[in-house]
Length: 196
Image 1 (cartoon, rainbow, N blue to C red):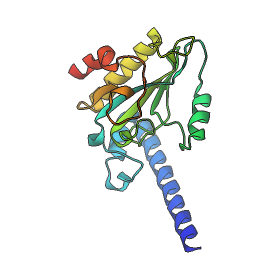
Image 2: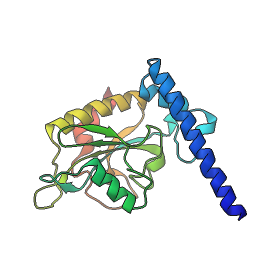
Image 3: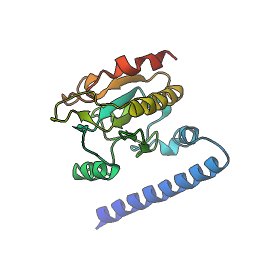
């Protein structure tokens, strides 16, 4: 019974902390502070250095992924969430998801530990674009012009926040599960941003 009570207290504490953080974020945002700046402020406080958060100095990689879905089929945020929950993630593992039409959605707070690239989750931001497979299901660069534009803007902004972070594809990181992801050369397409 003691272990159950301890776990309940831990869950309650995390819930309260998350509610307080969300209230502070809302207040700072209302004062005109950008969302990214708010997250850098909030998550660099010692109390936030828990397992689920990183500091700005921790970010070493901006990791590009693909959803590994066929370019002629839709893969919505709801489908992505369903699939990640089936893998026992607590939500979508990527920080950002970019649909074919260029719509960007954020699924993790900027300095929240992701679930996208073991063993690099605690030192990276995960960005996933919808697609990565051709109509026959073979790995292929299916990035649309709208996705490329949105990802370029996102990477430029993230590079300003994390200037030492390298832009890489999932497949470029040693020690990860062998994959073709993101089915393109991330550094060739976006590496120039590191020079800004």
